[in-house]
Amino acid sequence: MGAIGKHSNRVLLSSLMLLTVLAGCNDQRNQPDCSDVYKSRIDENDFDVLDGGIALHRPTGLTVTQCAVGQRMSNFRCRGNSLKLSWDDAMAYASEVAEKTGEAWRLPEKGEIPKILENKCINPAANPFVFPGLEVANFWTASKGLHQDKFRCSIYSYQGRVFCRQARDIAQPFLLVKGN
Image 1: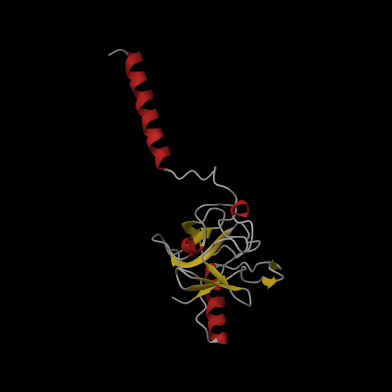
Image 2: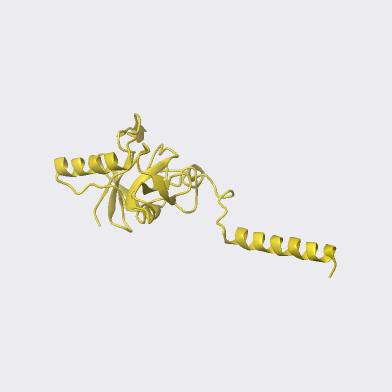
């Protein structure tokens, strides 16, 4: 086989490998914004919105804050700025809330948040009537990564993906959950 034939085979093989990799990726560029999917508070969803800025996710039994910690619910909107803490400080904050309220509030585990967020829409991947104005950011989870101790898991609210190589000393927002 000549040099041109070998080159063509390499190009074909590279193209096939690229197509195989791309076919396995979940392309979310064509997913709608969640604000386009949920048009009203009465749209079908898996939550019971309770008083005090919390919601019960019926399938998991988790109660979750509707706003990031530091914000407060007022007139169906999250007001104020989210509190951004390192992972250690966020964990300590959740422990303090649990101690002072007598309720088991905590940061969610990495496997819990994707169940609460939406997989059919993005920007953020959350029902805007349950989580009004949820910022697009990495949110801490309670989970540790499989890597070095300096990393922890966070979830990117834009599309609801977990990332477990987040430096634990970075200040990020977080939600609290209890139950289950």
